Amino acid sequence: MLKLDHITLELGNQTVLRDISFEVDPGEMVAILGISGAGKSSLFRLLTGELHPTKGEIFLDDFSFASLTPASLQNYRRQIGVAFQDFRLLPKKSVFDNIAFALEVCGEDEKISKKVPELLELVGLSHRSEALPHELSGGEKQRTAIARSLVHDPKILIADEITGNLDPRNSRDIADLLQHLHLTQGLTVLFSTHDPVLVEAISPRVIRLEEGKILFDKKDCSLEKAFEGVL
Image (tube, rainbow, N blue to C red; front, side, top):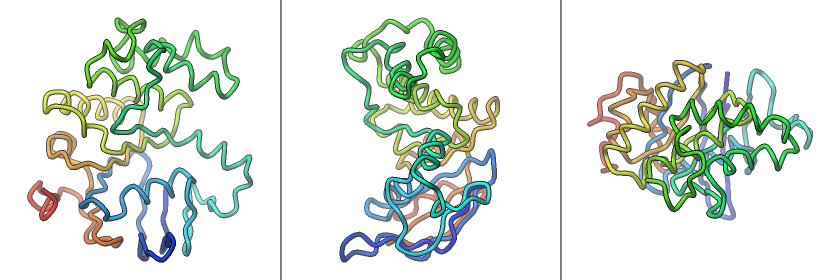
């Protein structure tokens, strides 16, 4: 279980997050919504250990982030997969090699021959393994990025505006993939988005941020309520 307990984040003279508290159970699908500047990206940077809260604590399976040693923090980060709007693929490497690179940098080359084909099949890209990023559609680029984020078998996937550069059809395909990962891998997914297609397809729990605070936290949230004042 992921737990945020009265988290406040100050960056310079600005309070970015104010007394944020919520829990995410294993296997939940949670959308973090809000206008630009509401605190979504800062929240994700806290969850990946890139930032540290000014006040409050973050727990994963009852272990506080504050108590982690640098080595333990690295091990924790392997439990968090991250995918971004801009894909962040290496332009001169194939789909296969982009995914393999995440294992290479961790000195786990021996896993590549087994793990990468498994991930390619999981995201539906086995037939595109040798393609370069410029030869891929937007949806295929995002599938590659998602596959790369899963190389360490994370417990949690953080997806930051992953359909922001996609058309509605590809957005629906990515939504279907997230649902598939959720159902077959038991993956916990936290994602930010301005894309009603993604939210409608997944029907996640919605946590709405406004000015760094939680405006509401709802399951079975209507699209109108979820995006009120955002779109």
